[in-house]
Length: 126
Image (cartoon, rainbow, N blue to C red):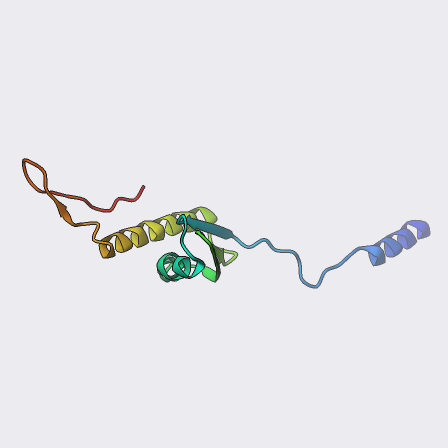
């Protein structure tokens, strides 16, 4: 009996204990590509509008972005209690909203003529 207690005490003192446990936060990465665009263009024309939309998402804890030649990567970190599937849907909705807003700025809704009558192009979330 004494041997079991001694073995237990020695084993207990050898157990690793961490003051701060390892926690995996819910993270979503968004990557946007625009061939040939400079990092400055990617940051101002692509990353900034997306970041503005992403700030409205509930449970967003941290956001970082990196712009390079022809691409931007935005990493979104959410609070631990945020459902990642719901967050992914919110991110997709924010991307679609940004796409339509930038499409309007680029005159996507301009009228084009055909033989029969004018048609109207509009943004769509693909």
